[in-house]
Length: 337
Ligand code: GH3
Ligand code: MG
Image (tube, rainbow, N blue to C red; front, top):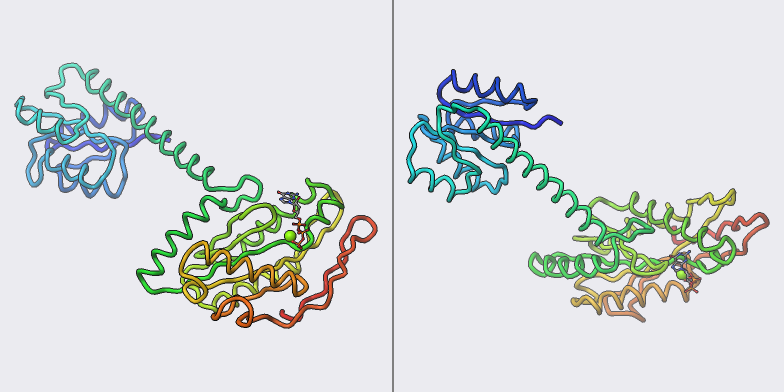
């Protein structure tokens, strides 16, 4: 990609000369004739470097430098001046100018070297930013499922609790566990089990609303965070998810594998206002779903686990035995659909 340089000078001849020189080096040139116009071009074109005159009408180079730095941009700025003035040079460098060169540029090479060095620095900065983003992404992602990991879940729950407290919003937290996953591993091996876990995670991510997020809690246990979601909102999302998972068939090594899941939901602040208690509530609701026959969800009730559980009618028992050829018999469709 060609790097863009914004050239700012009130003298048309100088703009033209600098533009031609830099263009012949392979850069894309944008020009402006004062600081005000330059700022508009800077915002619009996002250049990789600015080369600016200092003395200009309307808004001078120093004001332009200060405005760009104040915006938080890390784009470098090379100052050119026809009036050598030590005080201005110091002011420019103090405000973050990359270089300070005197006009006329008898040796245009001086400018070209400065430009190349500044752009080289920018390339390295951009590469570093990209690497840092990749590292951050890796640090929060589970490698097998591509879902967020346990560590990031803890961070998100902390943040969500603070946000929910401040704005008095509810949110829901769901624990999800694959039913009889051990049998999948026993039948198809761990690689087959991994394929199921990955496929299921993909569909969960694709089915969730953009504001919701899914995490691998550990093993074959996943969790979902639904910000600003009431009980009814969570019900709609969970029903949709359950429908998608029940109809999903994972093809692995010429076998078709079908699994079901159980889910437990706890709501903030109705069930708990503290992270560990909220996770425990959702976990207890999940195990209530397991005890009740799996392939279903249980909502921890507002009065806590036990009498307060709001549970859909039980699904018929599942014929979970693997069929010949390694295919699982379809599980009984829960009446809670
Ligand atoms: P339940 O319906 O009660 O949840 O039964 P289950 O068989 O799913 O649960 P159990 O706790 O007995 O077994 C969980 C299995 O999940 C055992 C473990 O080896 C497997 N497992 C955990 N993590 C992974 C993984 O990353 N890949 C694979 N293939 N298997 C995993
Ligand atoms: Mg399980």
